[in-house]
Image (cartoon, rainbow, N blue to C red):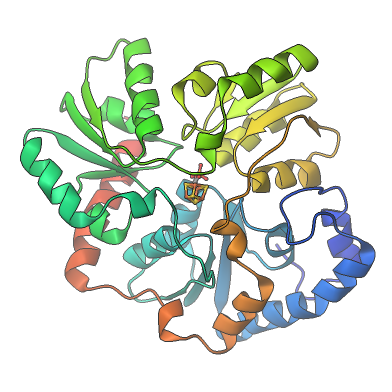
Amino acid sequence: MLKTHLTAEDLYEKLKNIKVGGTVCHYSLKKCEELTPIINEINELKEEKNAVILAHSYISPEIIYGVSDFVGDSYKLSRNAMTTKASTIVFTAVRFMGETAKILNPEKEVLIPAPLDGCTLADSINASQVRDLRKQYPDYTFVCYINTTAEVKAECDVCVTSANVYKIVENIANDKIYFLPDKFMGQNLKNAMERRGIKKDIHFYSGTCYVHETYNIEDILKIRLEYPKAKIVSHPECNAAVVDNSDFVGSTEQMLGFMRETETKEFLMLTECGLSSRLQSEFPDKKLVGSCTLCKYMKSNTLQDILRVLKNPLPKDRVVFHEDIRLRALKSIEAMFRYAQPQ
Ligand code: 13P
Ligand code: SF4
């Protein structure tokens, strides 16, 4: 739990080991002295307005360690959004994550501070394209990744996240699956089902994440030569050659869990730099090898915009839906929670 009043020394303790992924490339005590007045103003406003701040692990460290109440992957954050008692949720991530919080909490105010709230996966497909695909594949169960708009979720049967996609598809009774929008996750899903001996006819869409598609097998081979003891950890949005040659594959929260629990000290982490920052801050005895890529959408969240939406939200900062869309999207999210339970 955050202290309401944070000192520059408290903040520096959390940020001093971070070398990547912030709005600054490293944090000095002087930088922390500049950041703490705005952090404390946000934390006071949160109490006054009964608000909580949810932060994805890719967000800048000064937000995670300065003002967030919950931090995690998209599955964990959607569960946090479902259980919080606060009347306002400030979602520091990308728009589709804030939309999921609003779908689950129609009575709460959900605010999105990011000026760049896109995501290359969520932007790759729209509702009318899904309706056309459903005509082409009438007997298929449509499974959508959480990185989709509410309108797309409303056209699908089950929503999944990187934390539960394999388990959920395994549990769906229909052996005909259409997965969207990520082609790499679709291929990884197909491969995982084949490896588990589960017969499913899986088709998938052609979207990609511009961050994860930059990683390739050459990155892994180079690191294996230079650092033979390093473990390679990747996200299922990476291509199949990367995933098949990794030591661990999972959601951002599962990747952190693996790195926390394994004895290994060196890791190549094939995901967005925010996760590298969390490792550097929270497990200073572990070392990162290789480099990482930034997501411009996630990193567009700033303390200044959080303060602004808490003080004076504009119509564009508020998540608002047509009730019909919300209810149809809710069905696919509820199906996710049902299938994700132990069967
Ligand atoms: P996680 O749910 O694993 O955090 O992934 C979200 C995401 O946007 C990855 O690019
Ligand atoms: Fe979207 Fe990729 Fe950014 Fe995740 S990292 S929010 S999938 S663009």
